[in-house]
Length: 453
Image (cartoon, rainbow, N blue to C red; front, side):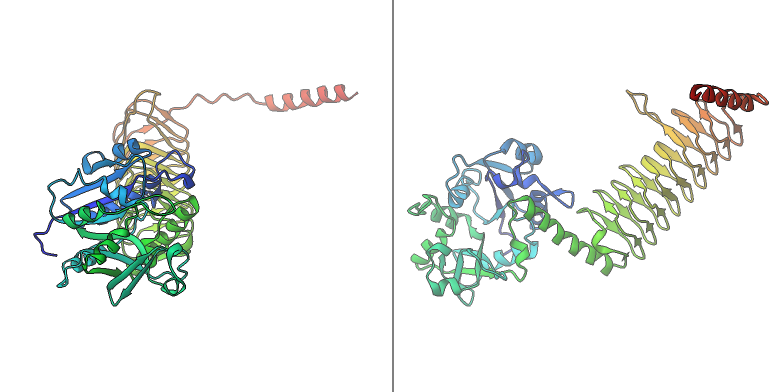
């Protein structure tokens, strides 16, 4: 492969995915908060493809809506096998003369390095017509076999058609392949459907090329999980688990401490710094960035949040999209932050909701404080100045500003701006009636006794 050779990717995603039992298209089911198809396309993107074609069938409207203009679409209807599916991309690639990678939307974790290896082998001195990606599973089951000498393929055979010696071969066909566009579509045109299923099978292009005296080669991945397909909810959960195990290991290798790694769940784009402590049962949704020396206590949920160095969160805290915690800010137990910035050293330690707000450096938010940011129709902003002190059980009714160094007395419902350095107490006047409680108790006890009598 040379830098000048253009690359196209054909991604097969026309299957009905009936085993998922879902209204959502199979390849849009998420792993680590990202559709499995997007995992695959992100890897393909590292090769800078000139064109991408997604072969669609059932549920194609969902795929078109999800990908938009990022890919061309080819429709396979009816679905007559994998060779027939790839053939549907020929029109979208008319005039393309580069290399083609054939991938599967439900095989999301093929590494860019593996794709490059396939393309490099395609441009070897023996100029193979087709390069197949093979794998060696622990149990070869009923996978199609790749019969090869060295990396040169002798025969591709489906398990049901294999003889005992061929079934003893443990090199299996992943279904993924690379070929030059001209070779691929010329070979596809010759694939027949004289088989039990009456379908056109993609591996047949290899046997046709071999029959022509062409060389075909196999590249073998060292990691069978890389080519694991996902066809059911159980397989989706298994793929999630494998992804999480690797991500946890990477976080620890990069200098984070996970107290109970098996209970921490990362998203596909979670960024974690060094000397970060993550306690048990923490879930990261997409869009979280954590700087160095952050502590995330147990039972927290973070999504779309940015944490600067020295921040402490939790336990039992929830950070929602737009939460920004600046250096050494602290969010404690049962505090929810959404679309709000806590300045350097600001604290909200207990039982508070801070939404659509700016909290200045060094400010203290007392327990039970809420920013009342929504009137049922629109959102409004609360601005709290530096070093302000908000007393417990206060309601800040936005839009409102609390000045620097101001104090809001506990139990206040603040509806107007508070000036810097001001004390604001908004409470009903306390009414004192000496002896009233004693008289009430005596009367109620007498009434209860009369009722029993």
